[in-house]
Length: 119
Image 1 (cartoon, rainbow, N blue to C red):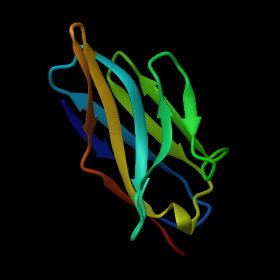
Image 2 (image 1 turned 45 degrees about the vertical axis):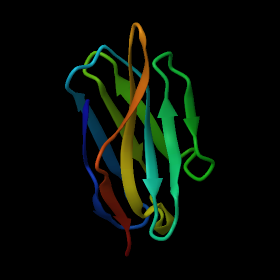
Image 3 (image 1 turned 135 degrees about the vertical axis):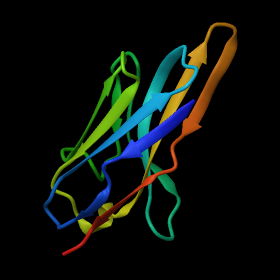
């Protein structure tokens, strides 16, 4: 499974960006899809995740500002980011779990897309 992210870039504080991630390859079923982020000098952390059943989890730091959504038929996940702040600066990674009958779920990562929030 290949995950391709797009939509990163440079934005001023208070601005918005929308990240997209498209999964391709041999996919039976996508379970949880998520966005993680890694700021300079810090570890990778969950920003938002959305299960196939519709359960959403947001990191406290992004609640009320970020919205995750997915299209199960197209195997895509998006992250709408509003009211961006400089601490949101990070590389954002798409993550998706693919499953099929008879084998465990397999986690897959995209290469990441840079989001920079700066005046």
